[in-house]
Image 1 (cartoon, rainbow, N blue to C red):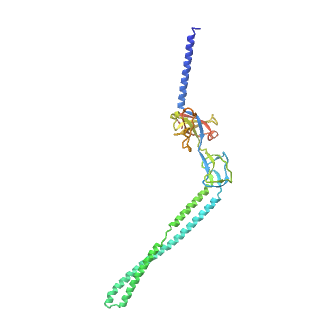
Image 2 (spheres, rainbow, N blue to C red):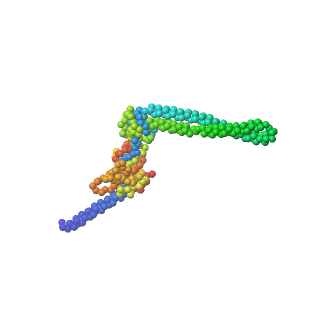
Image 3 (cartoon, rainbow, N blue to C red):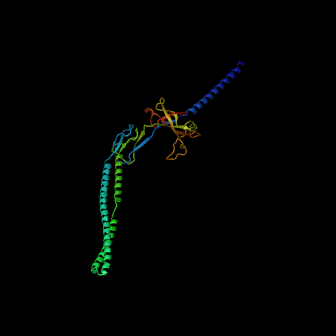
Length: 348
């Protein structure tokens, strides 16, 4: 018995060393695999959402969707009573027609004023010509009357005609100046037409906004209204989950971020069906998160809660993963998921 004791002790030591070596190799293998394929179970399925609201308010005339209904781009979601907005369009149209009629009247008045100014200008030109003729007549008769070749009375008549021509010229100039100053413009009437055109466009846009349509394909959630309800402008009636694009938000530990890069291929498993893999690609890595001890509302960066609050643990940062053709049965907003990133592998 004593002879076998050293052998048994040596065997036990070898077994212990072998177990330790296997554990070390296993740990190194796990570390290597984790560095090559970082993974996290702190992930969720995500999608863009739209809070559906109309820019205008009024009575909810009809509701064309139900809770959880799938809709397509262009589908009518609901209709606000359009009657008040149609009346507003009719009023704006009438105001525009009135402004256009005023503009036409202004143009006709302007044409009369311009014609009067032209007549006054021609009258001034004629008076100027008559005065020049009267001046020449007086200059010719003055030496002839001095020598007795013509009667003095004829010279007097020519001088009177000269003074009358001067007076007529002065009057014609004043009339021409007054006519020129009386010429109006159509600027104010044109501005009024532009204003009425803008008012009509606004009224027409408001009428169009009474019909709310889906901008993207999606699912209706949070619907709790019924026809007849009064809605305020921009009041959200329900939320539309965009089903055209799906994402996964995976919170990875900061020590794993060095092994993750945009473009890496990712496999995501939704907890709805863990046997169904979803192919994805890293779209971006969060550059900041809110610390648990410094919550400030409204938050401008993502808030990721630490796992423990009594020991210092690695912070987690959100990684946005775009899912490629995910199955509809496992894509629900907020569903838990697992994400596995393949380091250095770019998705094709």
